[in-house]
Length: 320
Ligand SMILES: [Zn+2]
Image (cartoon, helix red, strand yellow):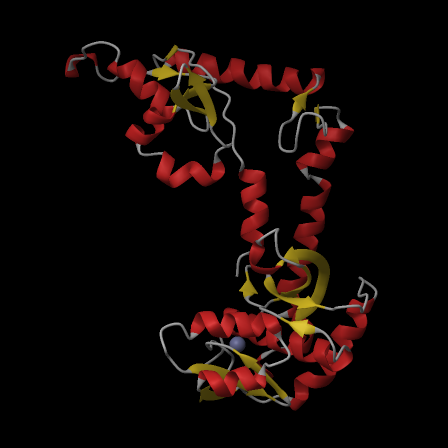
């Protein structure tokens, strides 16, 4: 059976760790999954400094190791055994404690000289991985377990596809996308700006950008009026109870700004910045008795919502 792309990417993550350990024997490896465009692996390089220029060397080492790997040999171990294997690696020990909490045996996979703690999902045959269909991509910092209280690790990203053509297409597409990056264009065209005093993810719309927004709104409003919509306006904050009633809070709290707590003579009221318009609109609907004969009721708002997505996006990138 041909290997799935995900299996190839996962296998390359092992190969990356093997190459790094070969070149930096003191480095501690942590975790390394397959991702949408390839794979990554997080390392604690200790005192060794690793930068973008070192990627070529690491990639060369991977290319050198690849033909010596055939498949992945699976074995199961008791917690004691596997802890002994990873005794010098506090990260793996932490994972072992977690994975073995239910008393199960732990599994490792070995390729060539390299063994890693892993639950599987590799290529059966490393020959399925075409040498020119992948490459190392870049470095980034990443906190262990995505938690900023933990140590900052070095993440090495690789790109991997089934064929060289797919890799080339991806690189080309990425290059084109970079030219159209809204952050770049926004700056060049003076559409919007950001300020550290205001905060990340909070754009300040400049005249050219505001004109664009006005024009878009104008077009949207014309279209809506034709379809029988009426415009409403609702406030930028609302009580917690509304978001609880609407059911948003349990699902969206993570991407909402922290609550504002008002203390009025000992009575605490919690407010949230608006992260979505719909619960406000439910209240507009509920403001008077309605008949099915009123339907469809078409109301629209150019509401501003505040989300913590920029941080969420960043922290999701840290998740396995
Ligand atoms: Zn694996």
